[in-house]
Image (cartoon, rainbow, N blue to C red; front, side, top):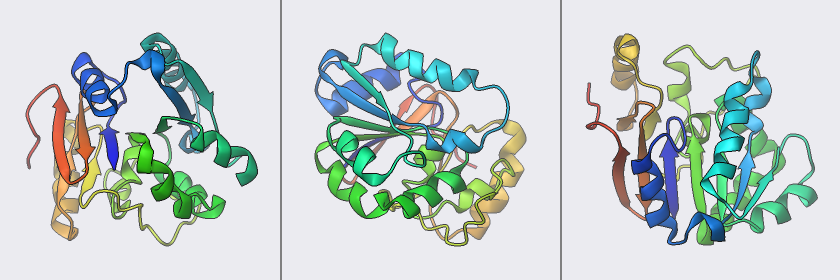
Amino acid sequence: MKLLLTSAGFANKSIIDAFLELVGKPFKELRIVDIPTAANMEDGDKTWLIEGFNQLKELGFSYIDIVDIAAVPRDIWEPRLKNADVLLFGGGNTFYLLDWINKSGLRELLPGILKNKVYIGISAGSYIACPTIEMATWKNQDENKSGLADLTGMNFVPFLLLAHYTLDKKEIIKEGILKTKYPVRILNDDQAILVQGNDYKLVGKGKEIKL
């Protein structure tokens, strides 16, 4: 399985170059589907979401589709996801995104769909690739408005990922690390984890963050 788990998407040239090496094709030959479902529960200004869509166009993807799995039935979203080379799960509310992955039936389909595709996660989209999304509670950022009881993630990687690291979150994160049974990888907004099979590589700017 090939994944690019990011804190803030294609934040710099190093992450972009790592993605192109992973996928093995230029942007002009790639079809991408952006799944912005996690953003549905986010209040306020959505400039960040629009900027993300614009960036995909600027990078030069040959085909850009936008599919909200909470807004359309499976017979609409399934063929569109299967038609893509790259699936991008964007940021927002992690609990809401995972809830809709479960309710829509995508949980059962996604591992098979990804056998010949690349998965990109941004923040919440990266969190759901982990064994559990428990880390979404550590920073008090995500509110479980969906009332999701089972926090089991997709388990594409054997570690938890913590996005948007800044020094002011250090103590909260350290408390979470002590409580979890999983190893934790921490990213600032200029970093990502490149996953190819069982190989996990830090890409972007700066050294690995260890607490």
